Image (cartoon, rainbow over all chains, first blue to last red; front, side, top):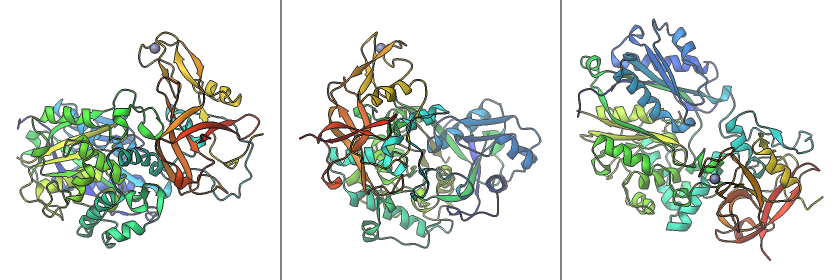
Length: 407
Length: 140
Ligand SMILES: [Zn+2]
């Protein structure tokens, strides 16, 4: 491992709660709390921080966060273009590039979500009560590229992420015989990990495969328990240079490699693009990016000890397992069935915090936090002697990933 | 006005200058794909630039409205008031379009009977005098 790579030296989070349960603290105050805890975890002071990085759809602009936290010199304020859940790892990568290039020395990556105080991601945004007197239906003006993209499919009722990512998962089932029970086993495994994690929103709610089978259908094959949580909470990670990392409070974790990926013609992915190329449709669309990532790090999927994979929906995790080469295309279902994802004896312990399905939905930055903890030996579902951790951002949208390593 | 399948309060199309002409064709019950006049590449949604030859010149090619279900989901949560549930959102591979697919709904069949590969044809739903939305139903 080279000695010039950026390191993650601190992680922190606020309390995680169910959607709408944090109303007495603002979303940006929660971001500040997570940042302060991450900086404290690193053994640094806010006076040391000179950069802030986040990713798309962040309401908590770095300039205001920097002012509220009294950052003396904000040298780097940066946002990733990849859509919401696709950009978390890219934000870490941007922080790493900044410190490696000398643009900043200590960059904090953050995410805060208090959706009860704002528009709810993935909600129709429409009155479904039937009470409103509708005006005569007509074509409306799109006020952004994203709205024009989604607006082309809105009249068919395509407004929910649960429906959008059901489409590739349904096709995966058709092509490869993937079953609902295989998706369910994944959800049950992550819930078991959450049950060991006091931070997890669903920690006290054990789940069996029968519970999964009994959960209501949302957009088939997605049942309720195939869908990630909606949460209030914030988390943050601190990135710095190897020199600065040397004598801090905790053992540093190295960012071995990072990549972003948007295949040709992919756009926003299956949510709004019915013309995702056939060879990519029933995948997470991450395979080409994954190969770049392995090539850059000089390691392969067999070298990964623990993985934190973005889990907005169970099927999207299954397809990532294939994209990243942990199993062959079409074999994600049997791979899950083999128990591979379990912290306890699985060949690829995955989402040891419980993931977005069962810890909290913080747009996957909590997966980076858990990746660091799993390499420090601080995870509540520890993997013995873990040296390499893969962390991914959302699949089935343009995405990003990082490989973390412990020396 | 046509047979109705969805309530008036369904989300409307949101269009910009690139996609609006497609809805103007739809209002005339013409199902079209965008065709590059330079390399004949066809696509949806419409784009200001051809992704294959980067030409900015294009026209509209009418398709038959026949196709097959490429993938689908049965949605059990309403997006509009007074909506029948579940409803089917599907990706339809359009016959004779040069390989173009489009998002739509499958209607006129029990949702549990929809399957990948099902042959379908377009049926226009006039949501108002100005807006027609293409849905698909099984052929025959
Ligand atoms: Zn062309």
